[in-house]
Amino acid sequence: VQSQQCGMAMSAPQSDDDEEALMRAQADLELLTAAYPDEITIHTPLPCTSFPISFTMHLQSTNEASSKAIKDSKSTITMQMKSGYPETTGVEITTFRAIRKKSIELAVQAVKDASLECLANGEESALSCCIAAQQVWDECMQDEADKLVWEEERLKEEEHVRLDLATQDDDIKWISGVEGCGIVHDRKSTFQAFVCYVKDEDMVRRALRKLIDGNNKIQRATHNMYAYRFTEILTNKQQSKGDLDNSEKTKTHILKHDNDDDGEDGAGRRLAQLLATREDDGVLVVVSRWFGGIHLGPKRFAHIINVARELLVKC
Image 1 (cartoon, rainbow, N blue to C red):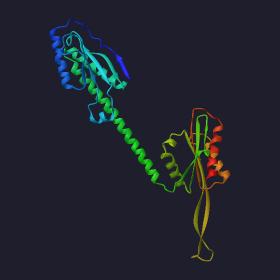
Image 2 (tube, one colour; image 1 turned 180 degrees about the horizontal axis):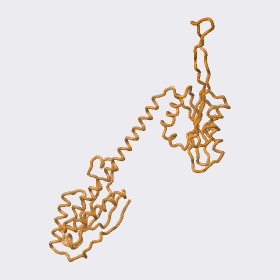
Image 3 (cartoon, helix red, strand yellow; image 1 turned 135 degrees about the vertical axis):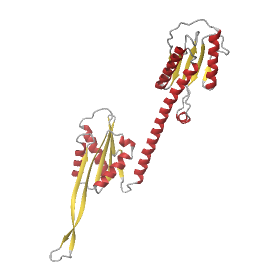
Image 4 (tube, rainbow, N blue to C red; image 1 turned 45 degrees about the vertical axis):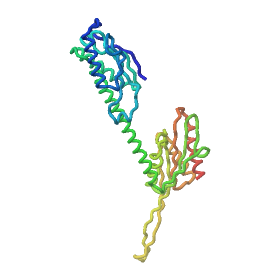
């Protein structure tokens, strides 16, 4: 909560109270309370018989949309009029309080600017100061409300994408590591394996998208390294000798494999070696690591391979 006492340096010294100054101050307060009946609290008994005269403005958004999005009833600016107002002294800020530091600082500056401008013209400034503060506050609250709406729309869009991913690609079935099989924790880092059966490169791409884009936790992982290995079968027609109309189908088996480190240099290659050693076919394995702030050295590769192996054996 931002709370501060401050004063505005005025060029003229405080003068004796006089009837005309009090009448002008009283008229200014009447205009102020008429414009802001719910936002202004006057601390000096009315009618005013002496200076200083103190009042507080409670800053609330006048925009319906932003007021619904942002609840803030603790933002106030307390001001006062001193002897000589408004000819030789303007409205001075005595205290201000708010949760939103940047917004209240902008509102306070708007009050100071309005007060100095009115003082230069010998005009009453209480109403002008409050109008300036309210305008700046409304702008700040509208900006915050716009950001909240944007964030809400972004989250809805993310949820829509996740739902789409959940309902699409029904042929993609991921198996996740669990505690005791496919998950290991070491010095605040966590390693988790995921396995999916694949038969072509398109299925690999769709599987990776479904796993990573459909899960915020996995998206936030420091590394999502993977490797895949599958045999693609191509069918061709081969013509038989002596018979142009007689042909037989031949099948060609092509082993396809690839890997990705995702920033953990050498991790993808090690996962690929694991799949090759086990002679796994039609498999995509992903290991996610959430870094805990402590470097594990070569031990991290042992964890990556071990969680992957545990889940592959289980599958």
